[in-house]
Image 1 (cartoon, rainbow, N blue to C red):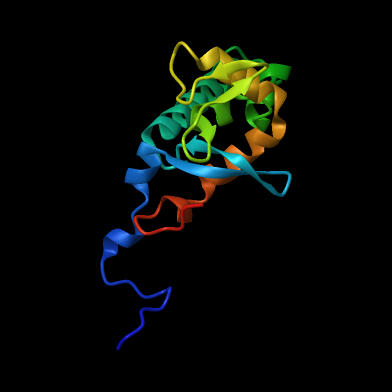
Image 2 (cartoon, one colour):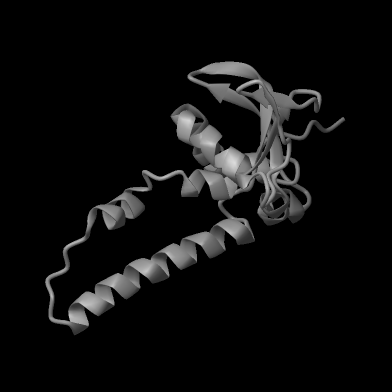
Length: 158
């Protein structure tokens, strides 16, 4: 009997990650090196929503640079522009953050109140508050979104 090795594929669909990146995956959180009892829904960096966000961000930066050049002004990036370039804001993680729940699907609380498991327009402010208070969660989301192996058709799912 033939045992399939990890690096052998028979169907090229196994290397496709776009569909799961668009749908988002639920991944058990690892915060400061420790597995937690909750999972986070993450949209991959290859997803349409993340790509559109990155394109808009790039267009805004190029617009600022082009306006400065047209006016004959030296290009001096203000503090907000530098933050955008360094991604010190919560926006990059917020756009990739689709939900949070206990492993098994039960809801969590935040400051004693039930926290919505799926991010919506109505709950986005709560999600922003959580990300503002947890740089470690932001790091986890950003690192996970970049890991294409998690979004493969037969990729590992934690």
